[in-house]
Length: 161
Image (cartoon, rainbow, N blue to C red; front, side):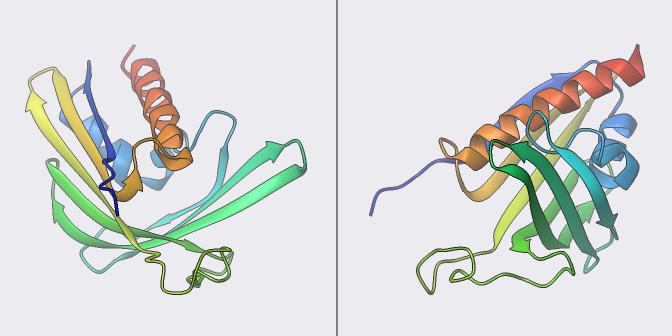
């Protein structure tokens, strides 16, 4: 078995830490940037507290028509404005977890990953390191995160400008 590098993206934003924290913890902000280019987030339910649940719905137009995906998870660690950790799994529209078999993967494939967001206050700027543990950097999920963080950067610039 080969080791794969998890997705890890580091960015420094020309915005205060309060705004970057809000982008990750307030549903209306999150829905405006999450997902790859062209994705829409019609559902963003986020109970941001340890043990709180998340249910994110994403829609994209594909050559085969509209595709919907749902992500569910639980907040595991919250250190306000500096660290956020949550689990992420594929789910259905009702928030139920999907099995490996339902996803077309071998039985027993781990379906839960973890997202770690670390923020550092640099005065008028904020350094962010986002790591998605369990998602290979070179995977479609890794590419999606790169596009999402590009969208986050554009949204922050729009709100800060």
